Image 1 (tube, rainbow, N blue to C red):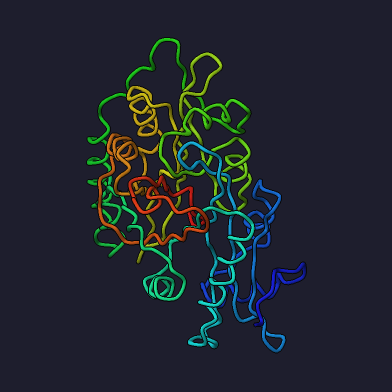
Image 2 (cartoon, rainbow, N blue to C red; image 1 turned 30 degrees about the horizontal axis):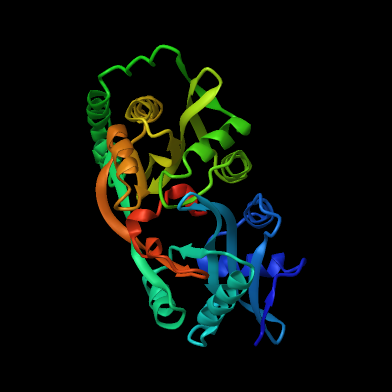
Length: 348
């Protein structure tokens, strides 16, 4: 079988394949962050399909420390699974996934998860014992409908002014003051106090990635191609919770509009903490035209936080496919047991 592990020097051909498949260029800085940067020393996990000197397929994996029912475990995120368009229908995608699953099982990973296209999902369910766990729930709210309307035709630009008034009305209420003894601050680097929060949240969901300081610094502050901001609520020297968000300009028809993504959050099991975080983030994103985020359908804590920020359930556009690699527990099959946010995938 022409499948082998990544070798130094494969990068250029991997990048060429990436551009051909996804129709966008990926910088080497982004590639190194994605595959050489993750905190675990067993990264990068990459398999390639090479035939007659041609690199025709690729699959990567993020290996991450996780909690499964409060106990340390390993989760793997499948990413950049791609096949040269000229080599489709040869079973390359399926064989790459089978080999990755076999290697992950041998290395002691517990579960794999991924967000495939509908076509890819079909092959995973049919050929690799994958399970369609659920479809991710997207939350989205338009704060400035005028900005979107103005992109359709120059004559509609006046609607942008109307939309700004609508947005201002949505956020007319001032942010509530922070409770006495607590303070809201922007975070530029995470230290061991975030490890303490990760430990205290180990039981927040039966299956979740550990949000340690090393993970957060790599995932959000080391990433070269996307700027993130983190806002945290503190009491004395203790982190009570944080929210990570990004703001981007999206080209649309004849203009652009701004989108705020609520990418990640973690907090103590305290409604007042979540309420304060939500109100604070609203202040930071109220100038944007669109708010969006996503979470698992049964993640009630995320639902409460996101609705307080101002986003509502819109649709379920993307399947979540999972594989079990070791001891099979009933917790695995229930989508409500999984905590998956935008920060648990590489595209946000």
